[in-house]
Length: 140
Image (cartoon, rainbow, N blue to C red):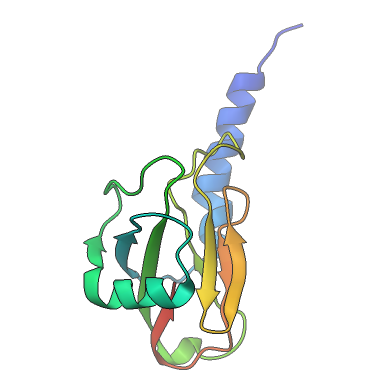
């Protein structure tokens, strides 16, 4: 029997990228990203927030960050459009994951002043946001 599995998988990936994912997130806004690489770990939340306030560097897609098994704290900010106010907003954070593997990659943990919110990994990149108000939004 003829094996077309590679062709079928390429078509599935294309369909997902061109049709399904754009339908999931039809409207987006860019986020500003800043980073701070810790000198060691673990670093308490309060120390990381102070360092992000004074030592954060601008970060763009493709920039290098962190050493193996190290820690980098990121601050993501965006302006929420007025017509998006309400429930159901998500921030999608991809830390540079390889799409064909779930393990042995980077991972993240989203924090608020009240504590940890949710982990981010290759199979979970969407972070539900609290009921949004128009204007600045910050994730750490």
